[in-house]
Length: 133
Image (tube, rainbow, N blue to C red):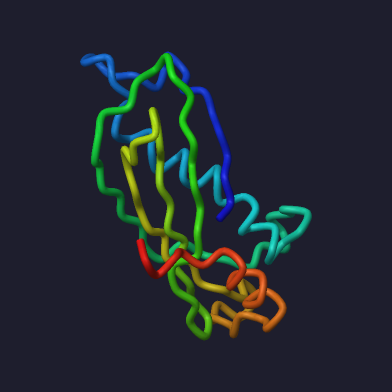
């Protein structure tokens, strides 16, 4: 698991005083930086090797402005050229949101997917989502 704690900003709240539902996908994307670095260590977008194929988010509990949140990032599935990044948002020791992003190892010059290198697959296996959860 990769863990990051962030402090919600006032601008991320909605009229009901909760963190707006549109914020969570942005938090998830920001917390995927360590995964991005496996493929592009310097995060140079001219050498980028991934594309986003799909995202989904489920909301479990309300999130609030004044309290820190922890974003937990796991690898949910490893395929030949694609993989799932499963993420959770926790606040007050409760899982408040979860989601999955499907990413594809991609060659932007040839416009084709590419096999995930074995060394990166090994890194991914270190962060697999526990099967017993």
